[in-house]
Length: 142
Image: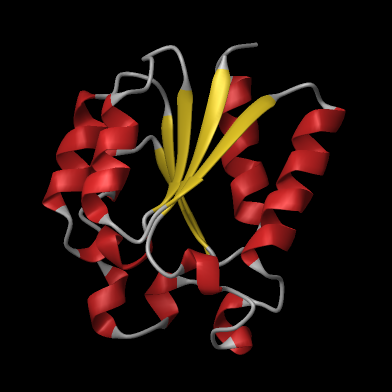
């Protein structure tokens, strides 16, 4: 089994964006922390980040259903029915993650069209939310 950590638009800019919301770690530092954690547990994790909706959809459509997805769709969470539909056809486990607590922010951020096709949502726990998402997926296969 492989866990795919998919990140949407502007996630490549964390560490540069408002650090009081997104934290001070860069995208590369977040990836390194997740890799270090997953390698120590012999969990195969693959990372993908794109600012382009179609690339995210193509990536999801090319996955095997025996894999799992931890996805931070960024702003696409709030309006991308196309990513929703791609996730819906993927039969493996899926967890939506947000670095910030989307329910404490602007009203438009409190709704996600992605959530209904995911097994769960982790919001507001920073980079550690990815770890929890991976742990959930791995727990389903123990």
